[in-house]
View 1 (cartoon, helix red, strand yellow):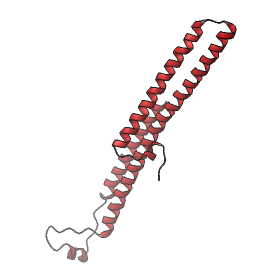
View 2 (cartoon, rainbow, N blue to C red; view 1 turned 45 degrees about the vertical axis):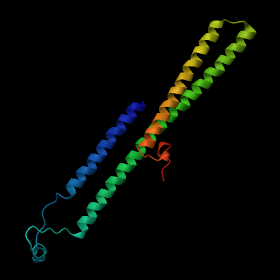
View 3 (tube, rainbow, N blue to C red; view 1 turned 180 degrees about the horizontal axis):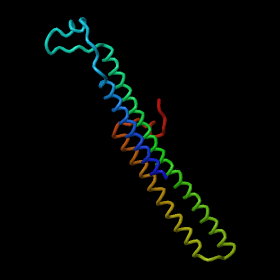
View 4 (cartoon, rainbow, N blue to C red; view 1 turned 90 degrees about the vertical axis):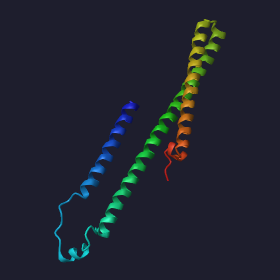
Length: 163
C-alpha cells in the first residue's frame, strides 16, 4: 500500500512539474503584438533587443514559483520517507515488546502448569526474529538520516517540521 502511494506521489510530482514547464513555455508563445512608431524607436540599432520590465518581472515570478514548488515537493518527499522509516521502527518496537510479553507469559505458564518447552522455544524464536527486525529498521532509519545529512537536508524535514 505504501509503495502504491509512493508511486502515485512520484507520478503526481512529474505531472505537476510538467504542467509548470508547459505553462512557462506557453506564457511566451503568444501571438506577436502590433508595433507602433514608439516601438520602432526602441529597436533602432540592428540586433538590439528590448524586453519590457514587466516581462522580466513575469519571468522571475514564474521561476520563483517553480523553485518554491520544487522545494515544497522535495520537503514532502523527505517527510514522507522519514515518516515511513519512523513507522517501521515503531512497528518493530511494538512487535518486540509483544514477543517479549508472550515469552514471559509462556515461561510463567510453564512453571505453573508444566507445559512443554517447545512453546517457550517458539516464543524465543519469535522474540529473536522481532529483535532482528527492530535492529534492521533502526539501521535503515539511521542510514536514511545520514543520507539526508550528507545531502544537506535539515533534520526537521525528516520529522515533517517545516519552518
